[in-house]
Length: 173
Image (cartoon, rainbow, N blue to C red; front, side, top):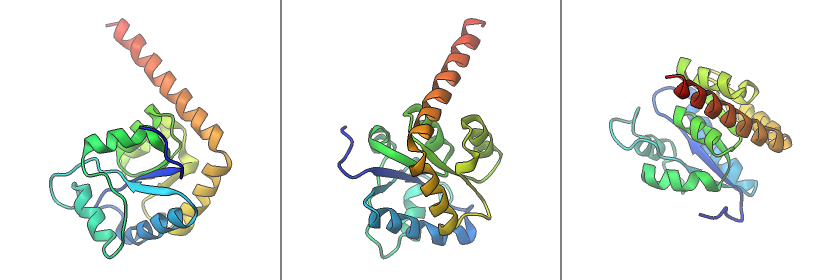
């Protein structure tokens, strides 16, 4: 799949954690559209209740709006290589951003995502629960874009190091 003309930005969100921060998601989506990006919600899970099911959560928070969304994990996996950046709340969104060398703003909701943020060295591009707001996102977005090549290189380097370390561990088994 080729990269689109407009820079595509993947958004991965998860229900049940954002509280008042949920109100920021439609504003972030609109901001990206208004600034010439092609935002798309990335669906990682389609089963369970709204807390697990990305389709149900996105449908509720984006009610009354038109938006782009992948419908399955297979579609999501095909979209990742076309992305300019990721705004990721799901752990796997951060992992896949790293695998594809894509700069990422993480939304950390617990120990698992916080550990990933530390591993990827992107704390300055992380919204922690309680700090999720449009204003905080916008500041981070400007930082990401102003330093895009640096963050893309960092993701590539982290991916290569993680892969190298894993291969060494496997050889020692």
